[in-house]
Image (cartoon, rainbow, N blue to C red; front, top):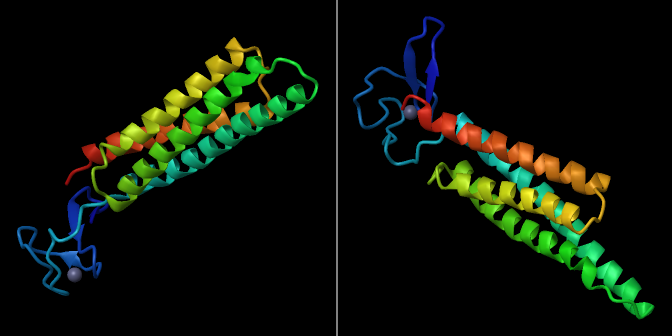
Length: 176
Ligand SMILES: [Zn+2]
């Protein structure tokens, strides 16, 4: 674990006991004895990225639910009156995409939080972002109208995904 002193000097702290590490070349902590390479390096930024990705994934679930629920209820309603409901297939498209994307998002979030393969976790945010773009194009194409639920959830997913990806990139640039 790293932090900077007010003088701008980089100091290391033991991730286990929190004591300052004097000998940075040492392979274990002089206070508690934990080997420094035993745990994956996780930074605050990667944790932040993981949390943002998790919230984005939750909103993505909401987009998915809106799509699938809308599709099912329109199908029900139209079928009851014998109308053709095929024009509502677009709800199913973006709904399913958003749910699949949320799975990628949650997986990426878990990677970031565990500090493992943090770079790959960006894939999760990319898939979620792509899902939002698809959703907006889909809603526009089928002329469904942008409800508040779709707009708020979609924009949240997009913004949080980008913020998460930025944190991952920043965490990679952190001095290790
Ligand atoms: Zn220690």
